[in-house]
Image (cartoon, rainbow, N blue to C red; front, side, top):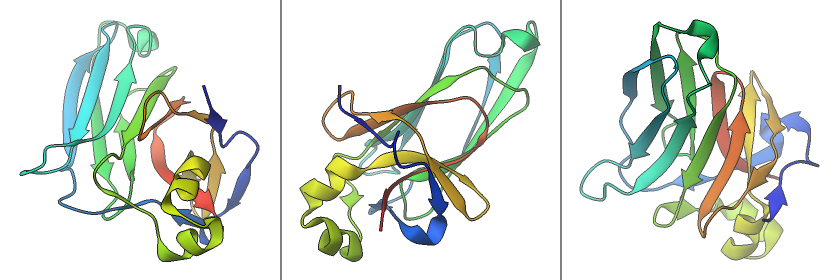
Length: 164
């Protein structure tokens, strides 16, 4: 599987192009789950498309430190971009995040100029964690065409981007 992002490290937010999203954005989502149960949250673009935007998968061990408790998970998509902010009422060990962009992919004009084409932009994409004005790229893989996935270990803001 092709891995991207692992050698990019951290850089200022101003030094990246965020992957833009067209169409109706996914709504904010809040779910309750029981610690000890596997849970996958699927975010979809708003109607009429209902195309998958992202999935966040917690396995049954993700919230084990909170055994017996109900956990609240809030996901707020970033307007106009492939990204979201994740809040949880308890810490978790790991979750798999997968962004899907088969329909609403829109490479920023500057990225097209730098990389040469939408396809070359897509090949360079990686998922990054946003902390203030700094993005830290995470090892990202492509489990399927037009999908990008990584493992996260904490709540926060995550986005799909390429270096400028």
